[in-house]
Image 1 (cartoon, rainbow, N blue to C red):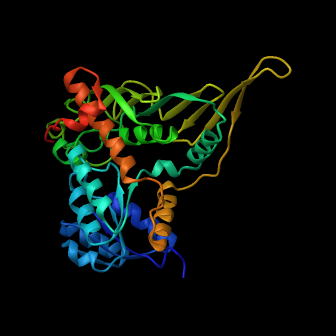
Image 2: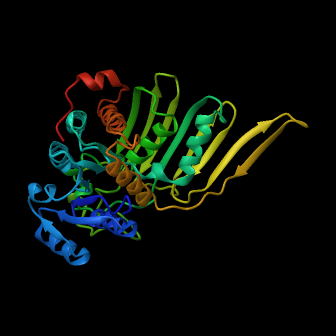
Image 3: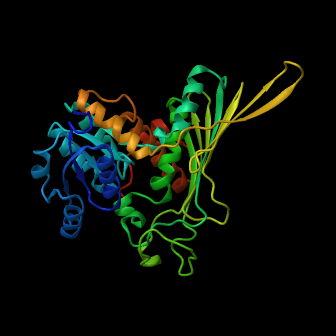
Length: 364
């Protein structure tokens, strides 16, 4: 029996991302036991598509599975993740950890006390080019990496206005907490998660709340600007205890070309990684034979990052041990940076992370 098929999995939250995960479980030959959702229509569609039982109550599903994948809107991550951990299940929790720092901290507390483990769904870490960059970083090829440029910018890409993505109460924020969370996580992951000490940032809402918002295509239905109360772009600068810095540009919508590039700048070399295309380039220099600069294109095998992430999760569940990556502690570190950017934008001042931990976060 394969590792994948030996684990009984349930999915909590049966919307689009729930279906996305279910499709990959099927590709892996995993045992999908059923799904959980409070919406009857969502349960019906999921049951018909995957020929499994669906449930409205947590206890009904949790008693049938070894592990769950949680894909609910952000505000409900805590409710289901904590309940699953309390039930002794292993959890793959879609990013971000939660809709607020306080909620994320409660999930972290539950995970620390649980018999099972919680893995946070930062799927971009599983891209093969990212693994290559991490390998060479650990080998010291780039010397001391002093700065990372992190971009996740869409020219026009606001999710359906009126969906939970554009509701601060449900999502906790907009572009920053939706796609910026990936950029922050990758930047910190490339640097092996140094301690962040100071964050300065600005969030903006320049397009989503306009009657004349112009787009070519949109994920979801457009209800209109009255259903939009979150940020659609953000810029930030992040300092770590070691002196390493990160510059961040995030946007659902902005008047500039799409940009998914990450740059690592080191004393002995640098890297360009494009998150969307998976293009990877190394930048180095030398003096042998004369001063010279070299740029090397690195080709990697393409992979489905959600599928690779699930393979790691299922193997860890079968072995009864955390996979050792995508930890709740790392997810909490990302959440603290997001919270600090929002605070910095509100106050117009840089935020120290120790101050973030002692102050009471605003209600979302």
